Length: 296
Image (tube, helix red, strand yellow):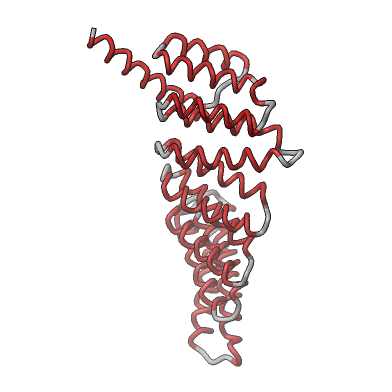
């Protein structure tokens, strides 16, 4: 391990010397970049030989970052790839540095018209913010990725990003935004033979967000719209659940609400996101019930 670190340091010294010397037509930048890359590989090998080393972990990212700077002097495409490599070397040790590098890679790919690659790194940044539970920033980058994917007609990837935006928007209680996205995806999916079977799931998510608003008239109108959008929806268990929950909300009946959720969950397991939102609605119902008790 120490041998590889020594080699890495030697390559760095050579690279720095190359930079300070004379080179024809910018060749010194390319040569120095190659040397920095060799240094980074040595640090990686040192890490893999005898387990994690704090020196290796700290060095790999900075060395690749130097290589990125050098490549920027010559080619935006190569520079973008180097920024991406630098970001990935930081991924397990420094999330902030990783995001900074990937953001640079995304911007450079956008400048040269590689929109799918730019979208890919925006999505990856969104995932990193999601892991950090920074939902506002995750939404911002998933939104960028969705727009770029949509521009390249990569519909599936665009919709994956949009669903993340809707999911986090609902968690942040931005229900109208979440509803708009789920309904839009449902409409798009109806015309796609591969996606149309997911329509009822999107409408269920939109309906749950409607329930969270606590507006019985709004959820009733929404259910009518969903039936017009997809005539088969009224025959699904998802529609029945929403209709029963809307009725329970209208009647301010907590028991009826709970029974409807339990019945659906016994057949189709509700995920954590749906469970969390439905609990919000239940708490809203309980608050109304307690308010009624206080009045009487």
